[in-house]
Image (cartoon, rainbow, N blue to C red; front, top):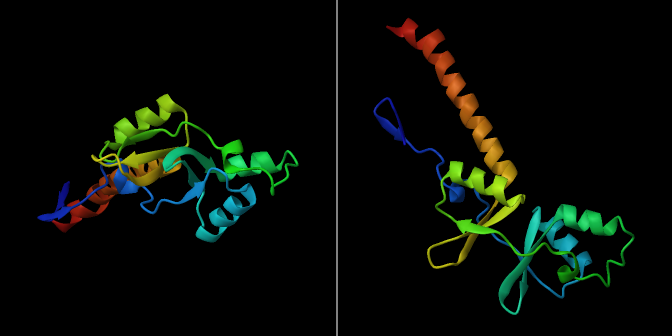
Length: 155
């Protein structure tokens, strides 16, 4: 929490703060043509794959492109044929610096966020973390410049 002018300003501090909260699913026996349609219609880059009620994997746009570039029959290729598994999940309250460590350790582009009950509550991308870190660095530098070039002139 940052205090500016006596006012509390909330800042991002957990994985959940920068995650996509709406999570999309497909069936493991769903053709990739239908998955591509879902990704496009919902303007998303990944979808979780369910098999027998559990999350069995994840498919990203890159997974689809890689598969389609192999001249695959999109009518016959199923989600389970191209999904990445297992899915890496972390606690939704994981702090950003710990999240960065997990991305570096796991070498994945997305992680599933779970609450204390083990329910899926979001998906976070590595790029969202890096954008947040870049913004925080920019914001910190901007505040320094403001303090140096403007604030001291007020008093």
